[in-house]
Length: 240
Image (cartoon, rainbow, N blue to C red):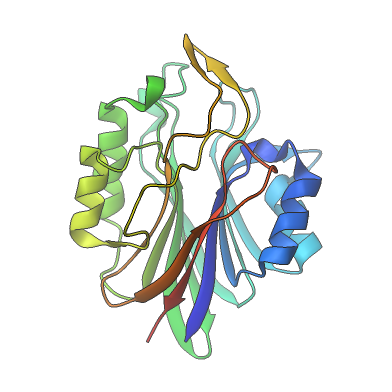
């Protein structure tokens, strides 16, 4: 079967109308979202899923992060989601009120497509100053790799890591990167200024789609939208 999968850090839904407009036109079968926040007794992923008519699972990673709102990851699907659960990648006991130490999760789903079950994960790993090496992110990667099945699996998200990082080398040992070139940046569309790190140009690659080695992939794309500070990414996955 052929599936279009898409991943996007939606920047807390600051430009929700643009996000929904893009995703309606993208027509992805499965969507992984990061930086989903809770607001007004709902969450931004639920608003998006309702607008698209998709099934949804969402789990918060932390109730009050440095932005003061609950935030987590979500997966949207055209197909039935038959099981879902969150996996804590770094514990709340390590949290010291910094972005890097925030608890992070992997959202795992089992999605049934034409009688075949596939595993799909949405992750958002620790931010470190200027995306430098991070022991917290290394811990999260190690815990993530313990969870991943070796077949019919798709892993998507904002890894806050450069393509040549040791963290991603570990992932590439067990999973296949859908982008074989890794030359296109995904961040930032809008100026960023935090903790003496300022960026005004689109020149950093932080977002990735991985698949288990039995899944054939084609047509990886860095998509174009101004709905977030990150660009969306997509690929076509062929799952047997």
